[in-house]
Image: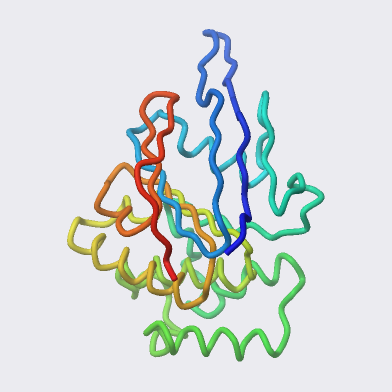
Length: 221
């Protein structure tokens, strides 16, 4: 199980008319292929900023981010980003919501529908294939959002507090579902959360202010 992602001394500061805010300072860690990393910390400690940097949405002020030893542009790796909200479109069916990313990237084929139906069946959503998002429970919507992201075949999956809108009991159940799906699909994943219960059993980084600390390591398979 080799190293897939490395963060070397990464810092990032937000600039505004009111001054500067340091979100990250000299952060370093690595993630191995097939590993599930959880970054735990309070709001405002730089967790989402870190995911945006890994996704290439913003660039670090200092330091480097390497995938397979190469910078983001040169690595040729796909990164999937699952946000806090599921962003399912109400006027599209569950199946049509799942095809959206493939449509945007012009990758939708007849075989895509075969794959979509297989995943819907595997993860308990096949009977809701033609349903609108309003017919789905919160947990079902999150599963659908994850499947939509996985259909793009990401090498690294980023999860930005995907359970935050759910009640506690549903959050525990859905987090188990999501981990099961990621494990079954053999994906490398990074989850950010403020709830330590969502981070177990994973490799965990604790983030306080702008300091990030590794506290434990385990693997999802």
